[in-house]
Image (cartoon, rainbow, N blue to C red):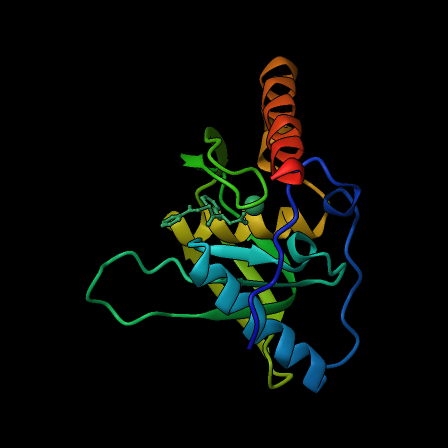
Length: 173
Ligand code: K1U
Ligand code: ZN
């Protein structure tokens, strides 16, 4: 297992549409393990492969919040939203690729998602609450979209400038 480097916005690799995964390989299982380790270490509740520089359609998430509850690590390969509610919900979102910036984003409050798991088996689940927000945020990453793309241009520009400054400071350190 290994901790992976999380790309920081702006980065062209975060804007690309990720490729479908044709088969489950040992390398893919190893990537999923590393992504989960990286997500828990960050800490975060989700992580998509483009955030670690891999342009493939795989994401991990675990939105269990209760301290004493068992973790629920999930690995979704080639996820597709097959249904979304008309009702929406607004959550204050963050992103490991845009550290320390948060903003309200409105999305469908429930979604049904189909995906392939690491055994190659097709899965389907309806998500609500934070799980629904998170899975939509992560699928957006696979489509080269960030939560700041939902904000007004001026706010997006301010956040992008802050991230450019952060990257310059990190490069100098
Ligand atoms: O995709 C990512 O960048 C991960 C992101 C997922 C996300 C957060 C909030 C709403 C939608 C999607 C994060 O995990 S940011 C960190 C975070 O939210 C968190 C960190 C520690 C404890 C609880 C939450
Ligand atoms: Zn994100």
